[in-house]
Length: 477
Image 1 (cartoon, rainbow, N blue to C red):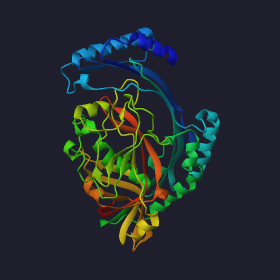
Image 2 (image 1 turned 180 degrees about the vertical axis):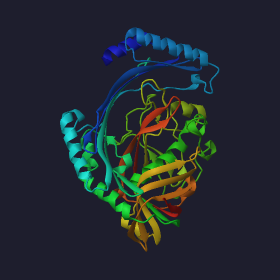
Image 3 (image 1 turned 30 degrees about the vertical axis):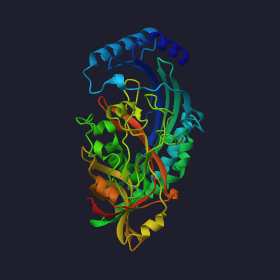
Image 4 (image 1 turned 120 degrees about the horizontal axis):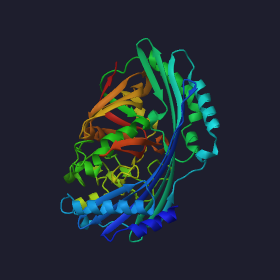
Protein backbone atom coordinates (compact mmCIF):
# COMPACT_ATOMS: atom_id res chain seq x y z
CA UNK A 1 0.00 0.00 0.00
CA UNK A 2 2.81 2.43 0.84
CA UNK A 3 4.51 1.82 -2.50
CA UNK A 4 1.28 2.63 -4.29
CA UNK A 5 0.78 5.69 -2.10
CA UNK A 6 4.28 6.90 -2.95
CA UNK A 7 3.60 6.47 -6.66
CA UNK A 8 0.36 8.45 -6.37
CA UNK A 9 2.10 11.29 -4.55
CA UNK A 10 4.87 11.58 -7.09
CA UNK A 11 2.24 11.83 -9.83
CA UNK A 12 0.17 14.39 -7.88
CA UNK A 13 3.07 16.56 -6.66
CA UNK A 14 2.74 20.03 -8.25
CA UNK A 15 5.56 21.99 -9.85
CA UNK A 16 6.41 24.23 -6.89
CA UNK A 17 9.48 25.29 -4.90
CA UNK A 18 8.95 22.51 -2.36
CA UNK A 19 6.36 19.78 -1.84
CA UNK A 20 6.19 16.99 0.72
CA UNK A 21 3.68 14.36 1.81
CA UNK A 22 3.47 12.92 5.31
CA UNK A 23 1.47 9.69 5.70
CA UNK A 24 0.48 8.91 9.28
CA UNK A 25 -1.33 5.86 10.64
CA UNK A 26 -2.03 5.30 14.34
CA UNK A 27 -3.57 2.20 15.88
CA UNK A 28 -4.10 2.22 19.63
CA UNK A 29 -5.82 0.13 22.24
CA UNK A 30 -6.52 0.69 25.92
CA UNK A 31 -7.54 -2.07 28.33
CA UNK A 32 -8.56 -1.45 31.94
CA UNK A 33 -10.27 -2.94 34.98
CA UNK A 34 -11.86 -0.70 37.62
CA UNK A 35 -13.10 -2.06 40.94
CA UNK A 36 -12.87 -5.63 39.59
CA UNK A 37 -15.08 -4.73 36.60
CA UNK A 38 -13.55 -4.92 33.08
CA UNK A 39 -14.17 -1.66 31.27
CA UNK A 40 -14.97 -1.44 27.55
CA UNK A 41 -11.89 -1.78 25.37
CA UNK A 42 -11.04 1.50 23.67
CA UNK A 43 -9.41 1.16 20.29
CA UNK A 44 -8.94 3.24 17.16
CA UNK A 45 -7.31 3.04 13.75
CA UNK A 46 -6.76 6.35 11.98
CA UNK A 47 -4.83 7.09 8.79
CA UNK A 48 -4.38 9.95 6.37
CA UNK A 49 -1.89 12.23 4.66
CA UNK A 50 -0.88 15.87 4.74
CA UNK A 51 0.65 17.54 1.71
CA UNK A 52 2.80 20.61 2.32
CA UNK A 53 3.64 23.16 -0.38
CA UNK A 54 6.09 26.06 -0.22
CA UNK A 55 5.99 28.34 -3.22
CA UNK A 56 6.71 31.97 -3.93
CA UNK A 57 7.41 32.59 -0.26
CA UNK A 58 4.07 31.18 0.86
CA UNK A 59 3.07 28.00 2.72
CA UNK A 60 0.01 25.81 2.30
CA UNK A 61 -1.33 22.52 3.62
CA UNK A 62 -3.85 20.03 2.31
CA UNK A 63 -4.87 17.03 4.44
CA UNK A 64 -7.09 14.08 3.56
CA UNK A 65 -7.99 10.54 4.61
CA UNK A 66 -8.81 9.77 0.97
CA UNK A 67 -5.64 7.99 -0.13
CA UNK A 68 -6.74 7.53 -3.73
CA UNK A 69 -5.00 9.31 -6.59
CA UNK A 70 -7.85 11.81 -6.81
CA UNK A 71 -7.77 12.36 -3.02
CA UNK A 72 -4.06 13.20 -3.08
CA UNK A 73 -4.49 15.44 -6.10
CA UNK A 74 -7.27 17.36 -4.34
CA UNK A 75 -5.10 17.80 -1.21
CA UNK A 76 -2.20 19.01 -3.35
CA UNK A 77 -4.46 21.56 -5.08
CA UNK A 78 -5.60 22.84 -1.69
CA UNK A 79 -2.01 23.16 -0.48
CA UNK A 80 -1.04 25.12 -3.62
CA UNK A 81 -4.04 27.43 -3.18
CA UNK A 82 -3.10 28.27 0.40
CA UNK A 83 0.57 28.75 -0.51
CA UNK A 84 -0.46 31.31 -3.12
CA UNK A 85 -2.80 33.08 -0.68
CA UNK A 86 -0.15 33.27 2.06
CA UNK A 87 2.69 34.44 -0.21
CA UNK A 88 3.75 37.89 0.91
CA UNK A 89 1.35 37.85 3.83
CA UNK A 90 3.19 35.54 6.26
CA UNK A 91 5.61 36.33 9.08
CA UNK A 92 7.99 33.89 7.36
CA UNK A 93 9.36 34.09 3.83
CA UNK A 94 9.27 30.39 3.09
CA UNK A 95 11.39 30.81 -0.04
CA UNK A 96 14.34 31.21 2.35
CA UNK A 97 13.68 27.93 4.20
CA UNK A 98 15.90 25.07 3.02
CA UNK A 99 13.92 21.90 3.68
CA UNK A 100 15.76 18.56 4.05
CA UNK A 101 15.07 15.57 1.80
CA UNK A 102 16.47 12.52 3.64
CA UNK A 103 16.30 8.86 2.61
CA UNK A 104 16.22 6.35 5.48
CA UNK A 105 14.16 3.92 7.63
CA UNK A 106 13.70 3.77 11.40
CA UNK A 107 11.84 1.42 13.77
CA UNK A 108 11.69 1.51 17.55
CA UNK A 109 12.04 -1.53 19.85
CA UNK A 110 9.29 -4.14 20.15
CA UNK A 111 10.57 -7.21 22.00
CA UNK A 112 7.18 -8.63 23.03
CA UNK A 113 4.55 -7.40 20.57
CA UNK A 114 1.22 -6.24 21.97
CA UNK A 115 -0.58 -8.73 19.71
CA UNK A 116 1.42 -11.68 21.11
CA UNK A 117 -0.82 -11.80 24.21
CA UNK A 118 -4.56 -12.29 23.81
CA UNK A 119 -7.09 -9.75 25.01
CA UNK A 120 -8.40 -12.32 27.50
CA UNK A 121 -4.94 -12.77 29.01
CA UNK A 122 -4.50 -9.01 29.29
CA UNK A 123 -7.76 -8.77 31.23
CA UNK A 124 -6.72 -11.70 33.44
CA UNK A 125 -3.54 -9.83 34.41
CA UNK A 126 -5.45 -6.63 35.16
CA UNK A 127 -8.11 -8.48 37.18
CA UNK A 128 -5.35 -10.10 39.24
CA UNK A 129 -3.75 -6.72 39.91
CA UNK A 130 -7.13 -5.18 40.71
CA UNK A 131 -7.74 -7.83 43.36
CA UNK A 132 -4.34 -7.07 44.89
CA UNK A 133 -5.24 -3.38 45.12
CA UNK A 134 -8.39 -4.00 47.20
CA UNK A 135 -6.60 -4.79 50.43
CA UNK A 136 -8.83 -2.88 52.86
CA UNK A 137 -12.35 -1.50 53.13
CA UNK A 138 -10.82 1.98 53.13
CA UNK A 139 -9.70 1.45 49.51
CA UNK A 140 -12.76 3.00 47.83
CA UNK A 141 -11.58 3.23 44.24
CA UNK A 142 -8.91 1.28 42.40
CA UNK A 143 -7.98 0.42 38.84
CA UNK A 144 -5.33 -1.17 36.65
CA UNK A 145 -4.85 -0.72 32.95
CA UNK A 146 -2.50 -0.64 30.01
CA UNK A 147 -2.32 1.34 26.80
CA UNK A 148 -0.57 0.60 23.55
CA UNK A 149 0.01 2.68 20.43
CA UNK A 150 1.45 1.64 17.07
CA UNK A 151 2.40 4.53 14.75
CA UNK A 152 3.54 4.19 11.14
CA UNK A 153 4.73 7.18 9.09
CA UNK A 154 6.07 7.80 5.60
CA UNK A 155 7.61 11.16 4.74
CA UNK A 156 8.17 11.93 1.06
CA UNK A 157 9.49 14.98 -0.76
CA UNK A 158 8.95 15.64 -4.44
CA UNK A 159 12.72 15.86 -4.96
CA UNK A 160 13.35 12.28 -3.82
CA UNK A 161 13.22 12.30 -0.03
CA UNK A 162 11.77 9.19 1.60
CA UNK A 163 11.73 8.25 5.31
CA UNK A 164 9.68 5.35 6.68
CA UNK A 165 9.33 5.11 10.48
CA UNK A 166 7.43 2.85 12.87
CA UNK A 167 6.98 3.18 16.62
CA UNK A 168 5.52 0.88 19.29
CA UNK A 169 4.55 2.47 22.63
CA UNK A 170 3.21 0.95 25.84
CA UNK A 171 2.16 2.37 29.20
CA UNK A 172 1.02 0.62 32.42
CA UNK A 173 -1.46 2.36 34.69
CA UNK A 174 -2.44 1.63 38.29
CA UNK A 175 -4.21 3.65 40.96
CA UNK A 176 -5.64 3.21 44.46
CA UNK A 177 -7.67 5.76 46.42
CA UNK A 178 -8.18 5.37 50.16
CA UNK A 179 -10.77 7.28 52.18
CA UNK A 180 -11.36 7.91 55.86
CA UNK A 181 -14.14 10.37 56.67
CA UNK A 182 -13.40 13.62 54.85
CA UNK A 183 -9.91 12.63 53.75
CA UNK A 184 -9.06 10.84 50.51
CA UNK A 185 -5.54 9.95 49.40
CA UNK A 186 -4.46 8.48 46.06
CA UNK A 187 -1.34 6.69 44.91
CA UNK A 188 -0.55 6.17 41.24
CA UNK A 189 2.04 4.03 39.51
CA UNK A 190 4.46 6.72 38.33
CA UNK A 191 1.82 9.43 38.26
CA UNK A 192 0.78 8.36 34.73
CA UNK A 193 4.31 9.18 33.55
CA UNK A 194 5.31 5.55 33.04
CA UNK A 195 5.44 5.12 29.26
CA UNK A 196 8.18 3.95 26.92
CA UNK A 197 8.69 2.64 23.42
CA UNK A 198 8.37 -1.12 23.21
CA UNK A 199 5.81 -3.87 23.54
CA UNK A 200 4.61 -5.67 26.65
CA UNK A 201 8.17 -5.79 27.97
CA UNK A 202 7.56 -2.18 29.10
CA UNK A 203 5.25 -3.49 31.85
CA UNK A 204 8.17 -5.36 33.38
CA UNK A 205 10.55 -2.40 33.05
CA UNK A 206 8.21 -0.57 35.43
CA UNK A 207 7.62 -3.63 37.67
CA UNK A 208 3.87 -3.39 37.14
CA UNK A 209 3.16 -6.98 38.18
CA UNK A 210 4.70 -6.44 41.63
CA UNK A 211 3.45 -2.90 42.36
CA UNK A 212 -0.18 -3.36 43.44
CA UNK A 213 0.35 -4.21 47.15
CA UNK A 214 2.74 -1.26 47.55
CA UNK A 215 0.40 1.19 45.81
CA UNK A 216 -2.53 0.15 48.02
CA UNK A 217 -0.54 0.25 51.26
CA UNK A 218 0.89 3.68 50.51
CA UNK A 219 -2.60 5.09 49.89
CA UNK A 220 -3.69 3.71 53.26
CA UNK A 221 -0.56 5.00 55.02
CA UNK A 222 -1.21 8.52 53.75
CA UNK A 223 -4.59 8.61 55.51
CA UNK A 224 -2.88 8.40 58.88
CA UNK A 225 -0.01 10.75 57.99
CA UNK A 226 0.16 14.40 59.14
CA UNK A 227 0.09 17.23 56.64
CA UNK A 228 3.35 18.42 55.18
CA UNK A 229 4.80 21.30 57.23
CA UNK A 230 5.36 24.75 55.74
CA UNK A 231 8.55 26.73 55.48
CA UNK A 232 11.68 27.39 53.45
CA UNK A 233 13.69 24.19 53.42
CA UNK A 234 15.56 21.58 51.40
CA UNK A 235 13.66 19.61 48.79
CA UNK A 236 14.54 16.25 47.27
CA UNK A 237 12.42 15.32 44.25
CA UNK A 238 11.99 11.78 42.94
CA UNK A 239 12.35 11.22 39.18
CA UNK A 240 8.58 10.86 38.69
CA UNK A 241 8.18 14.45 39.92
CA UNK A 242 11.31 15.76 38.26
CA UNK A 243 9.94 14.88 34.82
CA UNK A 244 7.02 17.26 35.33
CA UNK A 245 9.37 19.96 36.62
CA UNK A 246 11.54 19.61 33.52
CA UNK A 247 8.54 19.50 31.20
CA UNK A 248 6.79 22.59 32.53
CA UNK A 249 9.61 24.93 33.57
CA UNK A 250 12.24 24.04 30.93
CA UNK A 251 10.54 22.25 28.04
CA UNK A 252 7.65 24.57 27.29
CA UNK A 253 9.49 27.87 27.87
CA UNK A 254 12.23 26.78 25.46
CA UNK A 255 9.88 25.96 22.55
CA UNK A 256 10.88 28.56 19.99
CA UNK A 257 7.40 29.25 18.62
CA UNK A 258 6.31 30.20 22.13
CA UNK A 259 9.32 32.51 22.50
CA UNK A 260 8.32 34.13 19.20
CA UNK A 261 4.76 34.62 20.46
CA UNK A 262 3.00 32.16 18.13
CA UNK A 263 1.24 30.40 21.03
CA UNK A 264 0.34 33.53 22.97
CA UNK A 265 -3.43 33.34 22.63
CA UNK A 266 -3.69 29.64 23.56
CA UNK A 267 -0.81 27.87 25.27
CA UNK A 268 0.91 31.07 26.39
CA UNK A 269 4.31 32.66 25.90
CA UNK A 270 7.66 32.24 27.63
CA UNK A 271 9.76 34.20 30.09
CA UNK A 272 12.71 33.31 27.83
CA UNK A 273 13.69 35.84 25.14
CA UNK A 274 15.94 35.38 22.11
CA UNK A 275 18.74 37.51 23.57
CA UNK A 276 19.09 35.06 26.47
CA UNK A 277 20.36 32.27 24.20
CA UNK A 278 24.04 31.63 24.81
CA UNK A 279 24.35 33.68 28.00
CA UNK A 280 21.38 33.33 30.39
CA UNK A 281 22.02 31.48 33.64
CA UNK A 282 19.06 29.14 33.75
CA UNK A 283 20.27 27.05 36.67
CA UNK A 284 23.24 26.12 38.83
CA UNK A 285 26.46 24.82 37.32
CA UNK A 286 25.11 21.28 37.78
CA UNK A 287 22.22 21.75 35.34
CA UNK A 288 22.70 19.97 32.00
CA UNK A 289 19.58 19.48 29.89
CA UNK A 290 19.67 17.62 26.59
CA UNK A 291 17.26 17.20 23.73
CA UNK A 292 17.82 13.58 22.72
CA UNK A 293 15.44 11.74 20.36
CA UNK A 294 18.06 9.03 19.71
CA UNK A 295 17.45 6.77 22.76
CA UNK A 296 15.48 3.78 21.42
CA UNK A 297 13.36 2.98 24.47
CA UNK A 298 12.37 6.56 25.28
CA UNK A 299 8.83 7.55 24.32
CA UNK A 300 9.58 10.36 21.85
CA UNK A 301 12.56 8.83 20.05
CA UNK A 302 12.69 8.83 16.25
CA UNK A 303 15.08 8.91 13.34
CA UNK A 304 13.74 12.11 11.73
CA UNK A 305 11.23 14.75 12.72
CA UNK A 306 8.09 15.47 10.69
CA UNK A 307 9.90 17.94 8.44
CA UNK A 308 12.68 15.49 7.63
CA UNK A 309 15.36 16.82 9.98
CA UNK A 310 17.66 14.10 11.32
CA UNK A 311 17.35 13.32 15.03
CA UNK A 312 20.44 14.42 16.96
CA UNK A 313 21.31 14.93 20.60
CA UNK A 314 21.84 18.59 21.51
CA UNK A 315 22.52 20.41 24.75
CA UNK A 316 19.86 23.00 25.54
CA UNK A 317 21.41 23.98 28.87
CA UNK A 318 25.04 23.21 29.72
CA UNK A 319 26.68 24.05 33.00
CA UNK A 320 23.55 26.01 33.87
CA UNK A 321 23.82 28.32 30.80
CA UNK A 322 21.08 28.37 28.17
CA UNK A 323 22.56 27.22 24.84
CA UNK A 324 19.70 26.89 22.35
CA UNK A 325 15.94 26.72 22.03
CA UNK A 326 13.59 23.99 20.82
CA UNK A 327 13.11 25.23 17.27
CA UNK A 328 12.65 23.11 14.13
CA UNK A 329 13.74 23.87 10.57
CA UNK A 330 11.28 26.72 9.95
CA UNK A 331 11.88 28.42 13.30
CA UNK A 332 15.63 28.18 12.79
CA UNK A 333 15.34 29.89 9.40
CA UNK A 334 13.05 32.49 10.89
CA UNK A 335 15.44 33.48 13.68
CA UNK A 336 18.83 32.58 12.15
CA UNK A 337 19.50 30.69 15.38
CA UNK A 338 20.45 27.04 15.95
CA UNK A 339 17.71 24.68 17.07
CA UNK A 340 16.91 20.98 17.11
CA UNK A 341 15.01 18.36 15.10
CA UNK A 342 11.69 18.86 16.88
CA UNK A 343 9.08 19.89 14.29
CA UNK A 344 6.35 17.36 15.08
CA UNK A 345 2.66 16.77 14.47
CA UNK A 346 0.49 14.39 16.47
CA UNK A 347 -1.56 13.12 13.52
CA UNK A 348 -2.06 13.40 9.76
CA UNK A 349 -4.35 16.46 9.77
CA UNK A 350 -2.10 18.67 11.90
CA UNK A 351 0.99 20.60 10.74
CA UNK A 352 4.35 20.12 12.48
CA UNK A 353 5.09 22.71 15.15
CA UNK A 354 7.92 23.18 17.65
CA UNK A 355 7.51 20.47 20.29
CA UNK A 356 9.83 19.06 22.89
CA UNK A 357 10.60 15.38 22.26
CA UNK A 358 12.89 13.61 24.76
CA UNK A 359 14.04 16.29 27.17
CA UNK A 360 16.44 14.83 29.71
CA UNK A 361 18.36 15.95 32.77
CA UNK A 362 21.83 14.44 32.56
CA UNK A 363 22.74 12.49 35.72
CA UNK A 364 25.24 13.66 38.31
CA UNK A 365 27.38 11.88 40.87
CA UNK A 366 25.40 11.83 44.14
CA UNK A 367 23.70 8.77 45.52
CA UNK A 368 20.20 9.20 46.92
CA UNK A 369 21.49 8.72 50.48
CA UNK A 370 24.20 11.34 49.92
CA UNK A 371 21.63 13.90 48.82
CA UNK A 372 19.40 13.21 51.82
CA UNK A 373 22.41 13.46 54.13
CA UNK A 374 22.98 17.08 53.02
CA UNK A 375 19.55 18.20 54.29
CA UNK A 376 19.11 19.26 57.91
CA UNK A 377 15.41 20.10 57.42
CA UNK A 378 13.42 19.31 54.31
CA UNK A 379 11.00 17.02 52.47
CA UNK A 380 11.37 14.22 49.94
CA UNK A 381 8.48 14.24 47.43
CA UNK A 382 7.25 11.66 44.94
CA UNK A 383 4.68 11.58 42.14
CA UNK A 384 2.81 14.60 40.80
CA UNK A 385 -0.69 15.18 42.14
CA UNK A 386 -1.58 18.65 40.86
CA UNK A 387 0.19 21.59 39.28
CA UNK A 388 -0.17 25.17 38.14
CA UNK A 389 2.19 27.41 36.17
CA UNK A 390 1.62 30.84 34.68
CA UNK A 391 1.28 31.62 30.96
CA UNK A 392 4.96 32.53 30.61
CA UNK A 393 6.07 29.32 32.37
CA UNK A 394 7.67 31.28 35.16
CA UNK A 395 5.83 31.15 38.49
CA UNK A 396 4.69 27.64 39.44
CA UNK A 397 3.13 25.60 42.20
CA UNK A 398 3.32 21.79 42.23
CA UNK A 399 1.74 19.26 44.55
CA UNK A 400 2.81 15.65 45.10
CA UNK A 401 1.13 12.49 46.37
CA UNK A 402 3.80 11.30 48.79
CA UNK A 403 6.24 13.00 51.14
CA UNK A 404 8.81 12.07 53.75
CA UNK A 405 10.35 14.55 56.16
CA UNK A 406 14.12 14.85 56.12
CA UNK A 407 15.55 15.67 59.55
CA UNK A 408 19.26 15.89 60.28
CA UNK A 409 20.15 14.05 57.11
CA UNK A 410 17.69 11.18 57.52
CA UNK A 411 14.27 10.27 56.09
CA UNK A 412 11.76 10.27 58.94
CA UNK A 413 7.98 10.90 59.11
CA UNK A 414 5.60 10.21 56.23
CA UNK A 415 3.59 13.36 55.31
CA UNK A 416 0.65 13.89 52.97
CA UNK A 417 -0.32 16.72 50.63
CA UNK A 418 3.26 18.00 50.10
CA UNK A 419 3.53 21.06 47.85
CA UNK A 420 6.23 23.48 46.73
CA UNK A 421 6.33 26.72 44.74
CA UNK A 422 8.97 28.93 43.15
CA UNK A 423 10.03 30.83 40.02
CA UNK A 424 11.55 28.75 37.22
CA UNK A 425 15.10 30.13 36.89
CA UNK A 426 15.37 30.85 40.62
CA UNK A 427 14.37 27.28 41.34
CA UNK A 428 16.88 25.73 38.94
CA UNK A 429 19.63 27.95 40.33
CA UNK A 430 18.93 26.38 43.73
CA UNK A 431 19.85 22.93 42.35
CA UNK A 432 22.39 21.64 44.86
CA UNK A 433 22.95 18.00 43.89
CA UNK A 434 21.98 15.63 41.08
CA UNK A 435 21.55 11.92 41.49
CA UNK A 436 23.87 9.38 39.91
CA UNK A 437 22.79 7.15 36.98
CA UNK A 438 21.47 4.61 39.48
CA UNK A 439 18.69 7.05 40.44
CA UNK A 440 17.57 7.75 36.84
CA UNK A 441 14.13 6.76 35.56
CA UNK A 442 12.98 6.94 31.93
CA UNK A 443 9.39 8.10 31.54
CA UNK A 444 7.02 9.71 29.09
CA UNK A 445 3.83 11.70 28.66
CA UNK A 446 1.41 10.64 25.89
CA UNK A 447 -0.82 13.71 25.73
CA UNK A 448 0.99 17.06 26.05
CA UNK A 449 -1.40 19.65 24.63
CA UNK A 450 -0.42 22.63 22.51
CA UNK A 451 -1.24 24.26 19.19
CA UNK A 452 -4.34 25.54 17.40
CA UNK A 453 -6.07 23.33 16.47
CA UNK A 454 -4.94 21.36 19.50
CA UNK A 455 -2.34 18.60 19.30
CA UNK A 456 -1.86 16.01 22.05
CA UNK A 457 1.80 15.17 21.58
CA UNK A 458 3.92 12.31 22.88
CA UNK A 459 6.99 13.50 24.82
CA UNK A 460 9.67 11.73 26.82
CA UNK A 461 11.76 12.62 29.85
CA UNK A 462 14.42 10.95 31.92
CA UNK A 463 15.79 12.29 35.15
CA UNK A 464 17.67 11.33 38.29
CA UNK A 465 16.51 12.36 41.74
CA UNK A 466 17.61 15.90 42.64
CA UNK A 467 18.23 18.09 45.67
CA UNK A 468 17.21 21.77 45.80
CA UNK A 469 17.86 24.19 48.65
CA UNK A 470 15.80 27.00 50.17
CA UNK A 471 12.49 26.09 48.52
CA UNK A 472 9.08 27.30 49.72
CA UNK A 473 7.33 24.11 50.88
CA UNK A 474 3.81 23.89 52.28
CA UNK A 475 1.05 21.40 53.08
CA UNK A 476 -2.43 21.00 51.65
CA UNK A 477 -5.79 20.48 53.31
